Length: 250
Image (cartoon, rainbow, N blue to C red):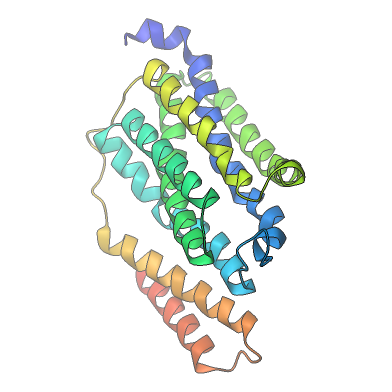
C-alpha cells in the first residue's frame, strides 16, 4: 500500500483500530456485572469468591505482564500481523469463555483472552504513529484514548443489557463478531509496518514480572478468603511475589 493511499484512508484505519480496541477494553469491566450469575449453581458455574476473583485477575495479570513484550514482538514481526493474531486469539478465547463448563475452564480461557488483548493493544498505538503525520497524531491518539474511556464506561451497561435477555456467556460471545470484523477490516485496510531496529526481548524479565504478579495476587486472594492474614499460605506468596518483583525492577 503506497503512502498516498494510507494517507487517504488514515481515519478509516483509525476506526478499524478502535473497533478492535473496544472489544479488549469493554471486557475489562463487563465481567463484573456477570459475577453474581456465574456464582449461582443453577444457570451459572457455581464459582466461589476466589474463583471469581481469579477469573478477573487471570485476564489482568496476563494482559499487564505481556503488554510491553508484545509491543516489541509487533515491531519485529509486523504490527498488522500481530494485531490480527491478537484479535483471532481474543475471539477464540472469548468463545471458550462463553461456553466454559467449570470455573477452572473460565479462568484459563480468560487468561487466553488477556494474551490476545496484550497482543492487540500496543499495535493500535504503533500503527497510529505510523499512519498519521506528527501534526495529526495528537488528535488521533486523543480519539483512541476517548474510545478507551467509552469502552470502560460501556462495559457494565452492556453486560447488564445482555444478562437481562441472554445467559451469562453472552457477555463473552459478543466479542466474537467484533473480532471477526476487526480481522477482516485490518487485513483489507491496515498497512503493514515494523521497526527492524527494535530492541531484544527480555525473556527473564517477562517471566519474573508475571511470576511476581501472580504470587502477589494469589496471596491477596487467599488472605481475603481465609480467616487470618497472618498465615503462611497468605504471607508466603505475598512476600515471594514482592521479592520477585523487586528482583525484576533491579
